[in-house]
Length: 542
Image (cartoon, rainbow, N blue to C red; front, side, top):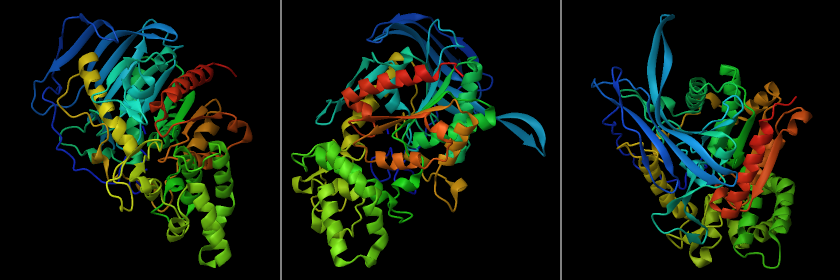
């Protein structure tokens, strides 16, 4: 599903912060002296059939309990295009610990945080041959619910699509195209998202930043890999939006810190360099040019170019964005009246906006304003996450849209689905709210990038040079207004790699937006594309 402070985040639908709710500790958090209390095995019936279930819980014996693992295991079957799969689901929180030193002397380990995850493993598979993928969304502040129930997991949400959203509360179906048919899956909710919370008495803000986030996610990957004897399994990381920035940095971190080499990295709606989509903070005009092909595609979708194909319009916009537009913006007040008039006319023709608006915008079309301006004559706004979606404008004279209609259309269905699924089907219960998008992570720290752009492409370069077998799959949504394809393509083109390694990067385009899998045709094709990528990248060749 799915750019952080200081730039609006790729996965966040609006710039308006919400007031965080107070965190409430779970009433049954296990303590250091907790005693296992197994429950009876039983069977239940629902569309994703549970064929045998065992649950292990713990009873708290201390009031100030350090976190321990609190996991629930259930067994299921699902019918897929590859046949019927029998699999084990494990949901819950695992306790992260760190090494403690006093005056340079090792003094043991200390509890850091309980992290929530949901893992699926195929029954009867050889762990040394079976691939495993570690999955997260972005934000920062987003839980993994979007990729979990939207694309990859064995169950999927019924949310509808542009023009036909599902009525509340939506629903759940078996996912016949689940990636579980090809690799095991571990969905990770970073700190303060999902059910992941800090240790009682500790500050969650210690994890709300680039480096701490990478370290904690890396520790989850290492810990799960070790505890499940999966060091010899082919391994993948799948991230979406800010999760692509996290994923690229994580690939380098896992190799450098733990010697854990990946077979593949999947970047869905990629943003590796936040300057490529930054309209506000650096005032470098780069994003204005890189958004132009997206503006053209969106205007075409909404009928602004009758008689012309989308590919023709987008190609024209891309050509102008590559050469003439950056030059025009760099000239500033040095443009002659004729040059400025020509630029105004060209931009209006490519974006579907009026020449008057383009001129008043000083040739610089900011994305939030574009979403509110394109269909202003209809009193409607277009979506940021997916510009195929439209919704009624909060005000006909507002400078920018008040809410993202593409997020409005799907949020309720995903939220209802994950809350039902975890409790009723995976049998994990908590009275905490499942934070699908958390504002508690703000302000997000980029202290490591002080004085320079927030750009992880050097880390991806290093990871690929260190591990020449690392393959990268990049997925683009044509109507993605959060991380537009042209911006991601420019960053990929600027990677400093030996020419032979460029062949390790592959691309896939879909006729949808940031979460391209909300479009059914794209979901089915993307599922097949990822299955093919995992299969090819898992081969032990060369």
